[in-house]
Length: 393
Image 1 (cartoon, one colour):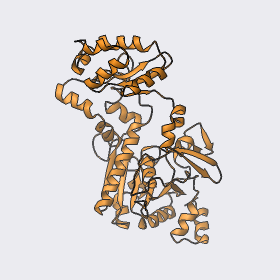
Image 2 (tube, rainbow, N blue to C red; image 1 turned 30 degrees about the vertical axis):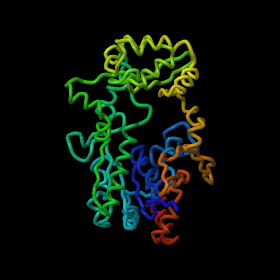
Image 3 (tube, rainbow, N blue to C red; image 1 turned 180 degrees about the horizontal axis):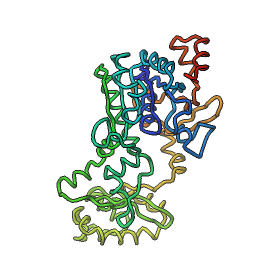
C-alpha cells in the first residue's frame, strides 16, 4: 500500500517568493507537515499579481504553496520568537530565505535553533550564499540568471539576452534544497545547508561550461537551436511553430524520407551531424522554406508517423487541455472552503511504492495559527493573550 515517505516530518518554513516555497511544497507533496511561518503582512508573493483568487491570495502564491499550513508570527516580538522556538522543538526541518545576517539579528539563526533542537536540519537560501565577496548583496532569480551566464546564452544571436519564461534558478535551487534535506533525513543527521541561487544557476551550465573548458571560447546565443546537433530547433510552419529534434544520423535519414527529400540524406554537405553543424547556415533556410508550405498539424502528424521526434510549440492553455497531460494527471483541483476551486500543477513523480501528492489548497494568511498553537499546547486564553500582544495573528 502506498505511503507518504515524509509523513510525521514537520517542516518550519520561513521562506518567501519562489525558491523556498517551491522546495517546501515538494516536501509537502511527499507528506511533510509544512508550517509556513509568515509575518503579519504575509509572504510578499501573496501580493504578486494580478490575477488574484482573493485578497492576499495571488495566483503566483497559490501555484507554489499548496499542502501547507499558515501561521502568523511576529518575530520582532519576544513572545513571537518564543512561539517559534516551541514549534522548532517538534520539528525536523527549518528552512529560511532571509538575506545573510538577518536570521541572526532575529535570533533564529542555525546556532540558536540547533541549541533548541540539536537534530534540526537547517537550510538557508540566499542569492549568493553565506560566504564570499557577494554575500551581502540582494539576490533574485534574475540576478542569478544574469551572473551565471545563462542569460547571455538565451535568446537570438542578433537580439539582446533574455530571461527564462519561468524563474528557473529559483526552481532548481528549490529542488537542490529538497535533495539536500532528503539526504540528511536518509543519513539520520541534523546539520546546516547553505544554498545560493547563483551556485544553482551555474550548475545548469553543464555542456555549455564544458564547451568553454574544452575550447577556451565563450558559447554563443543560438535561439532555440543546439550548438552541436542539427536540425534541433523550432521552425515556423504556415500557422505557427513546432520543434524538430533530429538527434542522430539515423533519424536524419528517416526525417528526409518523411518530408520527401531523400536527396538531402545523401548530400555530402548534410550527410552526418558533423556536416550539418558545419553547414547549418545552408541547411536551416532550406528547411524553413519547406516547412512554411504546410500547417503545424500537418508536419507533426507526418513526422510522428515516421518516428521523428517532433512537437508543436504550445501555449499554456493548450498544455493543460492536451489529452496526454490530462491522462498523466498533471493538473490538480483543490477546494478551499472560503475561496473555492483552486487549480495547481501536480507533482510529476509517478511511483508505485510511495504516495506523492498530498494536495490541500494553499492556505490563507494565518489560516492555521490557532490550530498549530493548540497542537503546541497553548490554551485558548494564552492564544488570545498572544494575539493581543501582537505576537501572533
